[in-house]
Image 1 (cartoon, rainbow, N blue to C red):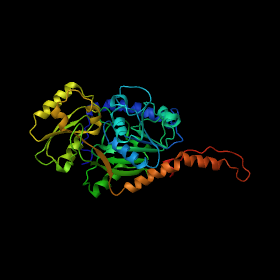
Image 2: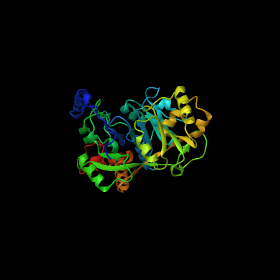
Image 3: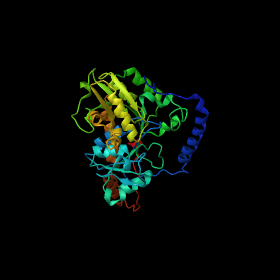
Image 4: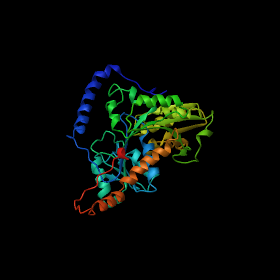
Length: 390
């Protein structure tokens, strides 16, 4: 059921109140203009959350990449969490998870024709993407994990909410997992409830819709995870998860915020799942390799390791993995599917915003505005058209 992964440490609620006061002051400074949010003359779409941990940001960003990259030149800008480098970097063929972060590396591997960049300062990153000759011609920028980065004012602000950890039931850090007050959701143009069960009942959709209590200008969507065939990380042939069977034993190796949804989705195909979970973005070590080797060897045959695309970026270069471990290691690719036949509506909203705010449209409007009309020689600079005005 919704919210079933939430755990609140009530004894930490006083600290949550102090944390919330600091967050409220910061947001108030942005709201009154003492801290400035910068707009850009290129379409900017932000994807993020207001909770700590995974809500499915990467597959949703990849969905947007797939939607837009055939018509426009797309750039993805990320902070590059836990990378071992600094400053602004554009990913290339020589980039690794250590230099740009595992999620940007994953996206660059999937979409080599898409510009992927990392920069802690998103404003600086957008300027470099749109002004540097090396990345000239960018038509749209996708911001990964930037809902709290209020120094940038995106044209579309997408908030992701995990079905199993609905923000309406959660509390602020450190008692709960919220990064800011529930009212922060009001900044979103689009709210997506992610990781929904495939068999979610119509009544549950209605209950969640009412409980989210969104404004009329906000759009609410529901998505679920969609798994592709397992692919070998080192050697072997792809396998569909439907072919695993009851005899198969799986070591589920993860370094993500919440692997429980993967277990729930794999269980109908293979009930023999042993989790080996590390912290989110865990940097695997040779000692971890020895642990993985021993855990796999202790399992009955047939046995295999299943891991995530994000973890694969760090496991690929891990030293100390036994030959059997390497042969047994498979990656489970994941994408998102919209529910309630909402996909077409979502796509139209995104494409309509990008088309209306693309540089070609703005330049054409500027040229038209600069023409004298009825003897009026005043000139007006065209403003960025907001998604909420579409």
